[in-house]
Image 1: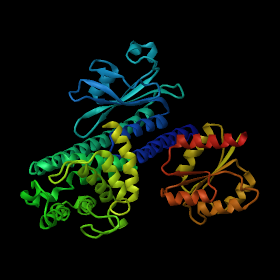
Image 2: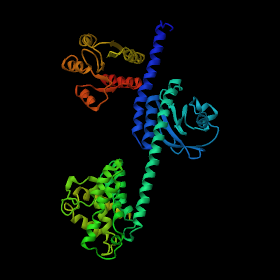
Image 3: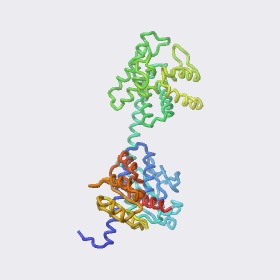
Image 4: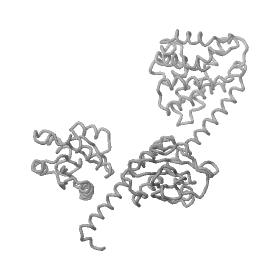
Length: 367
Length: 124
């Protein structure tokens, strides 16, 4: 190995090490984006990392459209126009996408590119490549120091783009899987509702109400998602209830009620193989429990009843009261709300009812 | 010229921070061990101390506690550098009077900005 003996060489080596360390620290921080499953969150994190690490005033993430003919801005900060789109051409952004390599341009205002990206002095672009395909590009522009872009900046941008590619692709796959799951559940529910004329649309409405109440309660999006699946599946146990009972055109007798009351437990049994659905299964099992522990199916009370089940209970009752039944006419929304309020602390969790009322106010304005 | 003392048992970290700060016109003293640090700090009277948490003999957090009990030294701001990334560690660090808690690997560029911010604040 060549001996480093001058102070200058040493300083350069330290500088190199320092750059490598900067890159390492960036990798360490940006790997956090893998814990985000929302594409929006990932993109805003990428843009803010690019701004602080490379020291630029402007940064943006652009996505390639389905057929690969247009680049559209997904997130942008600084002087980047968020509506900016680039149809496939021979411009500098597309060159970088096609070559799958980063490119940097300085003194843009003095070159033929000035009209392509008006207002920017310097720019560096790096394609975002996933495992399966090119997803888009990350762009940084106008260094704080007014300097040009150097190779260390390009290395940092490549690090950001490489991590972004994997995280974004991951999030897309997750979203697709989720859509597939929800789609499959909706089909199942449609099949269930087709077997009873009285409950058509019930599931979708209960889902809308439960999610609405959950949002008012400030639940995290992951919990809201679970609540949505629970609501979609809450009556799945009725698959095992005799059709004659579900379709009966008059009041049910005591034995028939016993059959009906089996559906929360049956629903839980049907779903028990889905190990990832543990919370959802418990929500479904206990959605007919009463807050005070009286007259529920399993006799659970207060906090023993899963939180999402208490929300589902209110949403389910609100829809039942405002829908026609073979043995009674539907109530007006106002009367249904009054009835729910009158059951606060006995049938329903007071905290959920408080949020339900807030949601109902908003809901009646919309409908 | 402002003066910063850096104490870390990793020579590369010392070199890297020293280089970064010197280029920004900040006077730097580096120490590879913490055992005689208190005397050296008293002699040098720096405007800021950058301290590694995990060092043999005397840990950064112990040294920090000693400094905060010394009436001559307790007002010198301290940055704690550490590979300990847990929130509870950060809480402990901040409780001991650390003004900045920086997890390794850190960005040298951001560190310089934080140093400049802290030194600037004291001037006014």
